[in-house]
Image (cartoon, helix red, strand yellow):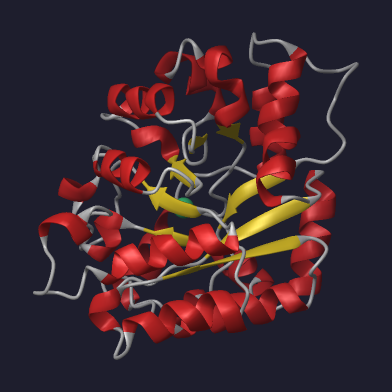
Length: 293
Ligand SMILES: [Zn+2]
Protein backbone atom coordinates (compact mmCIF):
# COMPACT_ATOMS: atom_id res chain seq x y z
CA UNK A 1 0.00 0.00 0.00
CA UNK A 2 2.65 2.47 1.01
CA UNK A 3 4.94 2.27 -2.02
CA UNK A 4 4.89 5.94 -2.92
CA UNK A 5 4.95 7.22 0.61
CA UNK A 6 7.11 4.60 2.28
CA UNK A 7 8.61 5.64 5.60
CA UNK A 8 12.38 5.84 5.41
CA UNK A 9 13.04 5.43 9.12
CA UNK A 10 11.51 2.16 10.26
CA UNK A 11 11.68 1.70 14.03
CA UNK A 12 11.29 -1.78 15.50
CA UNK A 13 10.32 -1.24 19.14
CA UNK A 14 10.58 -4.90 20.15
CA UNK A 15 13.69 -6.90 19.27
CA UNK A 16 15.18 -9.52 21.56
CA UNK A 17 18.88 -8.92 21.66
CA UNK A 18 19.52 -10.42 25.07
CA UNK A 19 22.37 -12.23 26.80
CA UNK A 20 20.69 -15.51 25.87
CA UNK A 21 23.58 -17.54 27.30
CA UNK A 22 22.52 -16.43 30.78
CA UNK A 23 19.06 -18.00 30.42
CA UNK A 24 18.24 -21.23 32.14
CA UNK A 25 18.44 -24.40 30.01
CA UNK A 26 14.67 -24.82 29.55
CA UNK A 27 14.16 -21.30 28.23
CA UNK A 28 17.10 -21.55 25.85
CA UNK A 29 15.79 -24.90 24.59
CA UNK A 30 12.43 -23.25 23.76
CA UNK A 31 14.20 -20.64 21.62
CA UNK A 32 16.35 -23.24 19.88
CA UNK A 33 13.32 -25.38 19.16
CA UNK A 34 11.10 -22.59 17.78
CA UNK A 35 13.52 -20.14 16.13
CA UNK A 36 15.41 -21.30 13.04
CA UNK A 37 19.22 -21.01 13.13
CA UNK A 38 19.05 -19.70 16.65
CA UNK A 39 22.78 -20.07 17.33
CA UNK A 40 23.55 -17.66 14.49
CA UNK A 41 21.07 -15.15 15.92
CA UNK A 42 22.44 -15.59 19.43
CA UNK A 43 25.88 -14.64 18.15
CA UNK A 44 24.55 -11.24 17.07
CA UNK A 45 23.97 -10.52 20.75
CA UNK A 46 27.71 -10.90 21.27
CA UNK A 47 28.59 -8.55 18.40
CA UNK A 48 26.64 -5.28 18.24
CA UNK A 49 28.32 -4.34 14.94
CA UNK A 50 26.99 -7.55 13.37
CA UNK A 51 23.53 -6.76 14.75
CA UNK A 52 23.66 -3.33 13.09
CA UNK A 53 24.56 -5.04 9.80
CA UNK A 54 21.49 -7.22 10.27
CA UNK A 55 19.33 -4.11 10.84
CA UNK A 56 20.75 -2.62 7.62
CA UNK A 57 19.89 -5.79 5.73
CA UNK A 58 16.29 -5.60 7.02
CA UNK A 59 15.72 -1.89 6.38
CA UNK A 60 15.47 -0.98 10.07
CA UNK A 61 16.86 2.37 11.22
CA UNK A 62 16.42 1.93 14.97
CA UNK A 63 15.71 -1.09 17.15
CA UNK A 64 14.75 -1.23 20.81
CA UNK A 65 16.43 -4.22 22.43
CA UNK A 66 14.01 -5.58 25.00
CA UNK A 67 15.68 -6.97 28.09
CA UNK A 68 13.94 -7.74 31.35
CA UNK A 69 14.33 -9.39 34.72
CA UNK A 70 12.73 -12.81 35.08
CA UNK A 71 13.40 -15.36 37.79
CA UNK A 72 11.60 -17.93 35.59
CA UNK A 73 13.94 -17.41 32.62
CA UNK A 74 17.05 -16.77 34.65
CA UNK A 75 17.54 -13.07 33.86
CA UNK A 76 18.70 -10.88 36.76
CA UNK A 77 19.17 -7.11 37.12
CA UNK A 78 22.64 -7.53 35.58
CA UNK A 79 20.77 -7.70 32.28
CA UNK A 80 20.23 -3.93 32.56
CA UNK A 81 23.94 -3.30 32.53
CA UNK A 82 24.36 -5.64 29.56
CA UNK A 83 21.69 -3.75 27.60
CA UNK A 84 23.36 -0.39 28.26
CA UNK A 85 26.75 -1.77 27.18
CA UNK A 86 25.28 -3.19 23.98
CA UNK A 87 23.68 0.19 23.16
CA UNK A 88 26.97 1.98 23.81
CA UNK A 89 28.44 0.18 20.78
CA UNK A 90 25.71 1.54 18.48
CA UNK A 91 23.94 4.43 20.20
CA UNK A 92 22.53 5.84 16.96
CA UNK A 93 20.75 2.61 16.11
CA UNK A 94 19.82 0.98 19.40
CA UNK A 95 17.44 1.84 22.25
CA UNK A 96 18.07 -0.15 25.41
CA UNK A 97 15.24 -1.53 27.55
CA UNK A 98 15.95 -3.13 30.89
CA UNK A 99 13.78 -4.65 33.56
CA UNK A 100 12.82 -4.51 37.21
CA UNK A 101 11.65 -7.04 39.76
CA UNK A 102 11.50 -5.76 43.34
CA UNK A 103 11.37 -9.29 44.76
CA UNK A 104 14.87 -10.13 43.58
CA UNK A 105 16.47 -6.77 44.34
CA UNK A 106 18.24 -6.23 47.66
CA UNK A 107 17.50 -2.52 47.43
CA UNK A 108 14.62 -2.05 44.97
CA UNK A 109 14.65 1.76 44.86
CA UNK A 110 18.40 1.80 44.23
CA UNK A 111 17.94 -0.70 41.41
CA UNK A 112 15.44 1.66 39.77
CA UNK A 113 17.73 4.65 40.26
CA UNK A 114 20.64 2.75 38.78
CA UNK A 115 18.65 1.72 35.69
CA UNK A 116 17.36 5.23 35.07
CA UNK A 117 20.02 7.61 36.38
CA UNK A 118 23.27 5.70 35.84
CA UNK A 119 22.51 3.41 32.92
CA UNK A 120 20.05 5.91 31.38
CA UNK A 121 17.93 3.13 29.90
CA UNK A 122 15.44 4.11 27.22
CA UNK A 123 12.60 2.11 28.72
CA UNK A 124 11.67 -0.59 31.23
CA UNK A 125 10.02 -3.86 30.32
CA UNK A 126 7.80 -5.77 32.73
CA UNK A 127 6.78 -9.32 31.81
CA UNK A 128 3.93 -10.48 34.06
CA UNK A 129 3.80 -14.14 32.88
CA UNK A 130 7.59 -14.48 33.16
CA UNK A 131 7.74 -12.66 36.49
CA UNK A 132 4.60 -13.98 38.16
CA UNK A 133 3.37 -10.50 39.07
CA UNK A 134 0.72 -8.08 37.90
CA UNK A 135 1.72 -4.54 37.01
CA UNK A 136 -0.88 -3.17 39.48
CA UNK A 137 0.31 -5.31 42.39
CA UNK A 138 1.41 -2.13 44.16
CA UNK A 139 -2.30 -1.65 44.92
CA UNK A 140 -3.21 -5.15 46.04
CA UNK A 141 -0.08 -6.65 47.51
CA UNK A 142 1.87 -4.01 49.38
CA UNK A 143 4.37 -5.04 52.06
CA UNK A 144 4.52 -8.78 51.51
CA UNK A 145 6.62 -9.02 48.36
CA UNK A 146 7.97 -5.50 48.08
CA UNK A 147 5.75 -4.79 45.11
CA UNK A 148 4.91 -1.29 46.29
CA UNK A 149 8.27 -0.46 44.68
CA UNK A 150 6.52 -0.67 41.32
CA UNK A 151 4.96 2.67 42.20
CA UNK A 152 8.42 4.13 42.61
CA UNK A 153 9.40 2.71 39.21
CA UNK A 154 6.41 4.35 37.51
CA UNK A 155 6.99 7.70 39.23
CA UNK A 156 10.62 7.75 38.16
CA UNK A 157 9.82 6.71 34.58
CA UNK A 158 7.44 9.68 34.38
CA UNK A 159 10.21 11.91 35.67
CA UNK A 160 12.61 10.57 33.01
CA UNK A 161 9.86 10.59 30.36
CA UNK A 162 10.61 7.01 29.35
CA UNK A 163 8.05 4.29 28.63
CA UNK A 164 7.21 1.14 30.55
CA UNK A 165 6.53 -1.80 28.23
CA UNK A 166 4.24 -4.53 29.53
CA UNK A 167 4.03 -7.99 27.98
CA UNK A 168 0.40 -9.00 27.47
CA UNK A 169 -0.95 -12.32 26.24
CA UNK A 170 0.18 -15.86 26.80
CA UNK A 171 3.72 -17.27 26.65
CA UNK A 172 4.99 -20.70 25.61
CA UNK A 173 8.13 -20.66 27.75
CA UNK A 174 8.41 -23.37 30.35
CA UNK A 175 7.36 -22.04 33.75
CA UNK A 176 5.47 -19.06 32.28
CA UNK A 177 2.34 -18.18 34.25
CA UNK A 178 -0.24 -17.25 31.66
CA UNK A 179 -2.71 -16.35 34.40
CA UNK A 180 -0.84 -13.02 34.28
CA UNK A 181 -1.50 -12.64 30.54
CA UNK A 182 -4.58 -10.41 30.89
CA UNK A 183 -3.81 -6.75 30.04
CA UNK A 184 -6.48 -5.32 32.40
CA UNK A 185 -4.07 -4.61 35.32
CA UNK A 186 -2.62 -1.92 33.01
CA UNK A 187 -5.86 0.01 33.59
CA UNK A 188 -4.88 0.75 37.20
CA UNK A 189 -1.42 1.92 36.16
CA UNK A 190 -2.81 4.15 33.40
CA UNK A 191 -5.33 5.69 35.84
CA UNK A 192 -2.82 6.17 38.66
CA UNK A 193 -0.02 7.45 36.39
CA UNK A 194 -1.73 9.40 33.59
CA UNK A 195 1.59 10.86 32.45
CA UNK A 196 3.35 7.50 32.19
CA UNK A 197 3.92 6.23 28.66
CA UNK A 198 2.77 2.61 28.60
CA UNK A 199 3.53 0.24 25.72
CA UNK A 200 1.20 -2.75 25.72
CA UNK A 201 3.24 -5.39 23.90
CA UNK A 202 1.41 -7.91 21.72
CA UNK A 203 -2.10 -6.49 22.28
CA UNK A 204 -3.13 -9.33 24.58
CA UNK A 205 -3.04 -11.89 21.77
CA UNK A 206 -4.55 -14.33 21.27
CA UNK A 207 -7.32 -14.31 23.87
CA UNK A 208 -7.33 -10.82 25.41
CA UNK A 209 -7.53 -8.56 22.37
CA UNK A 210 -10.94 -7.15 23.42
CA UNK A 211 -9.45 -6.04 26.73
CA UNK A 212 -6.48 -4.54 24.89
CA UNK A 213 -8.79 -2.60 22.57
CA UNK A 214 -10.71 -1.23 25.56
CA UNK A 215 -7.48 0.02 27.14
CA UNK A 216 -6.36 1.70 23.91
CA UNK A 217 -9.69 3.52 23.56
CA UNK A 218 -9.82 4.49 27.21
CA UNK A 219 -6.24 5.67 27.78
CA UNK A 220 -4.30 8.06 25.56
CA UNK A 221 -1.10 7.09 27.35
CA UNK A 222 -1.38 3.42 26.34
CA UNK A 223 0.20 2.34 23.04
CA UNK A 224 -0.07 -0.96 21.23
CA UNK A 225 3.08 -2.74 20.05
CA UNK A 226 2.09 -5.23 17.37
CA UNK A 227 5.02 -7.59 17.92
CA UNK A 228 4.85 -11.39 18.08
CA UNK A 229 1.75 -11.98 15.96
CA UNK A 230 1.84 -11.96 12.15
CA UNK A 231 1.00 -8.38 11.05
CA UNK A 232 -1.53 -9.90 8.66
CA UNK A 233 -3.62 -10.65 11.80
CA UNK A 234 -3.68 -7.01 12.92
CA UNK A 235 -7.07 -6.20 11.39
CA UNK A 236 -8.53 -9.46 12.60
CA UNK A 237 -7.58 -8.57 16.19
CA UNK A 238 -8.14 -4.81 15.87
CA UNK A 239 -10.51 -4.15 12.93
CA UNK A 240 -10.73 -0.43 13.73
CA UNK A 241 -7.02 0.15 14.23
CA UNK A 242 -7.17 3.34 12.12
CA UNK A 243 -9.14 5.02 14.92
CA UNK A 244 -6.13 4.77 17.22
CA UNK A 245 -3.37 5.00 14.63
CA UNK A 246 -1.37 7.47 16.70
CA UNK A 247 -1.06 4.78 19.41
CA UNK A 248 0.31 1.87 17.33
CA UNK A 249 3.99 0.89 17.15
CA UNK A 250 5.73 -1.61 14.92
CA UNK A 251 7.59 -4.38 16.72
CA UNK A 252 8.74 -7.77 15.51
CA UNK A 253 9.76 -9.76 18.63
CA UNK A 254 12.59 -11.15 16.45
CA UNK A 255 14.28 -13.63 17.04
CA UNK A 256 11.60 -14.95 19.37
CA UNK A 257 9.76 -18.23 18.84
CA UNK A 258 8.22 -18.56 15.36
CA UNK A 259 9.14 -15.00 14.30
CA UNK A 260 10.31 -14.60 10.66
CA UNK A 261 12.96 -12.05 9.66
CA UNK A 262 12.05 -8.44 10.47
CA UNK A 263 11.80 -7.40 6.79
CA UNK A 264 9.00 -9.92 6.28
CA UNK A 265 7.06 -8.31 9.13
CA UNK A 266 7.63 -4.85 7.66
CA UNK A 267 6.42 -6.04 4.25
CA UNK A 268 3.31 -7.54 5.86
CA UNK A 269 2.46 -4.20 7.52
CA UNK A 270 2.85 -2.43 4.17
CA UNK A 271 0.44 -4.89 2.57
CA UNK A 272 -2.38 -4.21 5.05
CA UNK A 273 -5.49 -2.55 3.53
CA UNK A 274 -5.08 0.62 5.60
CA UNK A 275 -4.14 4.16 4.49
CA UNK A 276 -0.48 4.98 3.76
CA UNK A 277 -0.52 7.56 6.55
CA UNK A 278 -1.49 4.87 9.06
CA UNK A 279 1.27 2.57 7.80
CA UNK A 280 3.75 5.43 8.18
CA UNK A 281 2.58 6.09 11.73
CA UNK A 282 2.91 2.41 12.69
CA UNK A 283 6.30 1.75 11.10
CA UNK A 284 7.96 5.00 11.93
CA UNK A 285 6.31 8.21 13.03
CA UNK A 286 4.76 7.15 16.34
CA UNK A 287 8.01 5.65 17.63
CA UNK A 288 10.01 8.69 16.50
CA UNK A 289 7.67 10.86 18.56
CA UNK A 290 7.53 8.52 21.54
CA UNK A 291 11.31 8.18 21.86
CA UNK A 292 12.06 11.68 20.61
CA UNK A 293 14.41 10.27 17.92
ZN1 LIG B 1 9.12 -10.03 23.41
